Amino acid sequence: MFTVTLLCDPKTPVVGPAVVESLRNAWGGGDAVWLSPDVAAEFSLEVMPGNRWDVWADLQKMGVDTVVQPSEGRKKAMLLADMDSTMIEQECIDELAAEAGIGPRVAEITARAMNGELDFEEALRERVGLLKGLDSTVIETVLHNRISLMPGGKVLLATMKANGAYAALVSGGFTAFTAMVAAELGFDENRANTLLIENGKLTGGVGLPILGREAKVTALNEITTRLGLSTGQVMAVGDGANDLGMLGLAGAGVALHAKPSVAAECDIRINHGDLTALLFIQGYDLDGFVGA
Image (tube, rainbow, N blue to C red; front, side, top):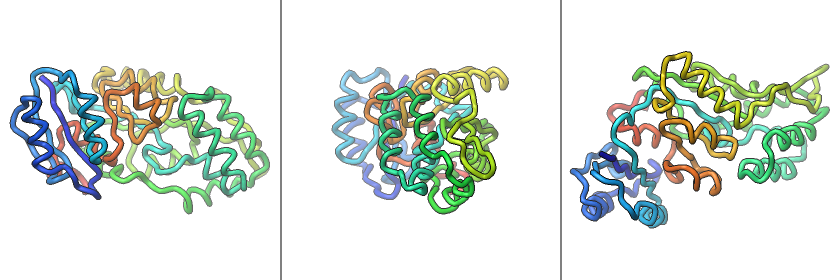
């Protein structure tokens, strides 16, 4: 048995009854269940539709995300999340570079690395090297003036944790940022890279080993083993090429507003919804949201 979820950006509700009923009838699905009026609905299916990606593409034009997944085990016991452009709306290294006056140069490298065009570790070393000599106080400046949380994050964490889930933030960014984001959102633990500082200045170096694609997979395996969970009980979410390993290994790998080359490798693609989409696709309805 499969479940089809249709959802959109809660700020622009476009999932009306006509949209849901049209697809339900076309695919021969069960009765529609509304998770949030005009924002999210679901229905059951006995077989995976052969034209699901064609339908997905058509509904994308309407601002609607469509997810088809096995019904069994949809609610997950663990959330493993990327940080940059996932739990926060920015790339922290790009914001540091902007403060240093080299924003465009670093942002270009970041975009290419996240799209899988560059080796992540080499790209990180190159970008951090460009920050050499920057006053370390710029980290606090960026944290307080340039970083904003992705919509829906607090509700996602609060709801999953209220239902017994464990949450880990695993980032190719930096501990100075993950510590704050993890504390504000309620993550149980966080892992990231360390910016090296000497005499109040960034050295242009990053602590070893560098946390990249394989380290995120390692984190998933280590944490699930420690908690006695299977990888199938994990929902992972990210947007960049360095997230693909954990997205592929998790029971539900969510490409959130991801680079096209990344989304193409994932069955769950959220391009319009915010982070509450991760609750809808687990079957949570609006009444079950915590802290909304």
